[in-house]
Image 1 (spheres, rainbow, N blue to C red):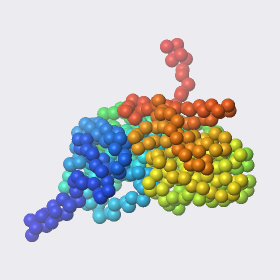
Image 2 (spheres, rainbow, N blue to C red):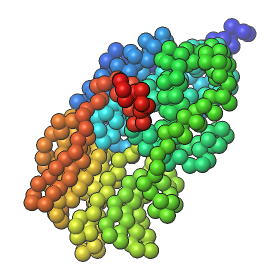
Image 3 (cartoon, helix red, strand yellow):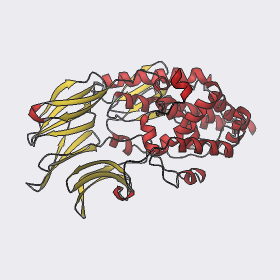
Length: 443
């Protein structure tokens, strides 16, 4: 009887580990080492870059942990953020369900952001296999509760590094943030991603890389994060919480906004012109757009389904000099540019053949400048004519991100930043400026 039960359990476990060697119908595949990428036709160049980022991250994290997941891990590159949001979550099958081998990612406005997403989500998948794979030897979620701050916090810290954006997000810390973490109820959002990363930044800066990796592995051996902290760092969870909260407070900066200027819902993007305010927000499972004229608020068209995520969406909005409003939404295939023309009192929508749009600005009343990531994995600056809807390539970025700034006299400036997608994230870790002491000045 025992032998029969073991055979049944082994078959169930084996069925939970498909090798994902063949992509679903309509998808293409390429493989580099133990990482496979699924992509749609036309995205070969971008998929090649995703494959390189994924293989590099897998080699790095498996070398640090001295642990290699069995088989091949698959990165599915969705054609748009909306396609990623509409992908059904895997149905829970109980505490003994083996971890997924599919890493779901979506294109973002820059190569560096996409590389960070691929690295972070793949590292999180490796950690799930570290803690919850290898047969039935008590590797289940009942014996080891894995909070997001531990697994996802480390994955994003190691996959992205510590940046100035994290400091900016922490300035928005609500008073209920720590209470929500303690009650295991925080939503997934870019703010909590940065808050969780700050824990690991504190540990990394205080105890060093070796101790951080030892902590991850000790949690696997003891099946308890509390015991792992005590054995590795000689810290209780309460002591870590106190030290971490003090560290987060030390990063606070004076906010440039007054409480009266804040809206009732978190704002993902905004544009202002005189007495007009346009903004995008996440509400009830969707991205929604609004226009406020004096004291009256109107909902704009273009809403699309979304789900809580740690990644930050880029949803540019811009007013023209005479009050035309343009904003970016997404359909499954890619981005849409919506335009509200107050003179004609109508909305118009235009599909744009790029992967994502990072930023945009009006030049006069008939030209939009768009900074976008293409299927070739390049960041390009385009002009988009209104109402003809002609998209033309202006020039290729020397770096990664572009912010177009049309000037008077027909000139267009563009702010840009270097491409850091090929660098190890912790090699470009960012820390805020701090006052130096007299002794440091003397040096």
